[in-house]
Length: 398
Image (cartoon, rainbow, N blue to C red; front, side, top):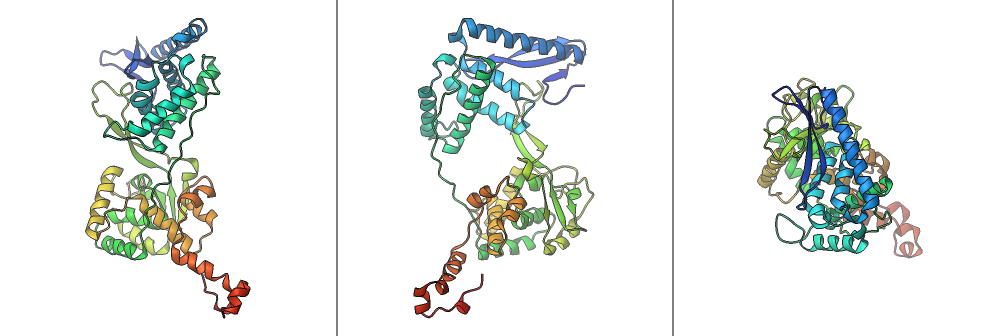
């Protein structure tokens, strides 16, 4: 039986069709080979034989005509090899980067001519005017992602014996930390008051992000079976997101450019259990539905993150807080935890981070008032502080 991601389907005439990438055109678009057989097993075996022959031919050509092996062919071979090793969302992102950015600029170069200088020039060009939707360049983080794809493909080529230099280094881009958005206590109170005026389960998602730190995709993927209200626990097990609908995996009749997928969260550490604050339990019980139903919809269908984000922004506009993005809820949760004296290890596990350093770098933002109280604690420990009348018992409580 055909499985998702195999690129095998049964045609209306009863035959089985298999497709695979055999290379890239000069404009960066993928080229495909088609195989037809009477049964699924036959077409799969024939497809695999053709792919093996193609790989063998490519390696042979690399030995006798190294200058003819193009970077686009290596990228296609690498993509085919990782298809079953990565998530659909990751594969879709890699494919889009290759087709839209890397292949049009570097795909036609023979591997022998793909040097550090060429890659560095590519990165600088993307930084200055690489945005395909509007004028201007791409962010350092986005370009770093492209360079990572190039590194992975070159490593793959070196392991396969292709004529590429595994030691090719690419420039390391200096990235600015994005501006962190955090609700003040007054702004948070305004948001909470507006949520209490809302009906239905819409408010549950925002309150859950604000008080448990869930991402928007995790909120959209939350089912009632993930909430153990008796023991006060919430389990994060899946995430919803929209990804590009790859042309070689879509049926001919499908015209949509994107599709919704429900998958496990972004990392293994993101699969986690979180204690639910007692004050939220009555709100959950008020809307509780069948275990298979999604929390935000109360049905078997999930809400798309993009649509939920729009409704969130509509609510913020009513509160005069429209400049905040959804991730500000997660940052605000982390900040309130630090203010309340959470230990960083517990906070890191609740947020679903792989290590504590990620939590400290990106999510721990103590306010000035907390920093001031910490600094005031130094007074009784110093001679200068004691001379100026600050005694140990006057040390402010944290």
